[in-house]
Image 1: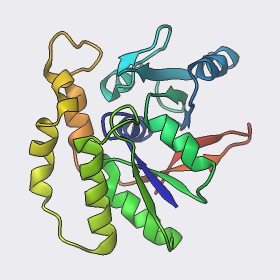
Image 2 (image 1 turned 90 degrees about the horizontal axis):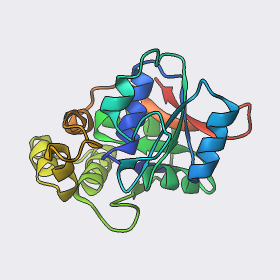
Image 3 (image 1 turned 120 degrees about the horizontal axis):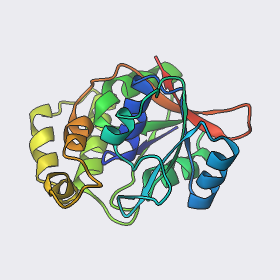
Image 4 (image 1 turned 30 degrees about the horizontal axis):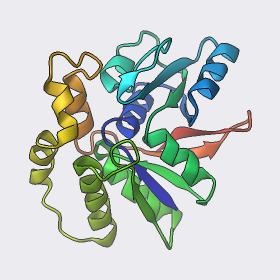
Length: 214
């Protein structure tokens, strides 16, 4: 089993979208493949970024604030491509027997899902900055999940201050960074606000998609 973590912002986006009623989220590695899915299914919502910025022609950037503002989100399918998170999910799907997303917003539910599945081995994958280097937010989320899985103590009071000081959080408080709304920080740093895990599952069309699991 693998837990793929991308706190700022891919896995947080997915959890918030599903909580708001979206039917599923299809993680896609390639930008053109995502666009092709949208062309074939115009009612699907195209969400994504490269270098944290919304891609041309996409309905939303990789932003929970933007996704939650979409009218009629309930029941829709999202096609999601990002620089790190969706890359990790697609890679994990090729090797792991089960794949969950990792984020602060549904951390407790993720741990419960791991236990319910009876996983004997869990690989925690912190995607980091653009899948190239470690980052504070993903490493910290990995520490939290590991501690909870092992029944160890973890000081949750340090989460928000550490995230606020993280280099990747600067953009949320920069007025010039209109592609990273300030509201995204609170939406990504909230702890255990959604009581469901997010799991990658096969779909009738032949590709896997992320769905909520109670």
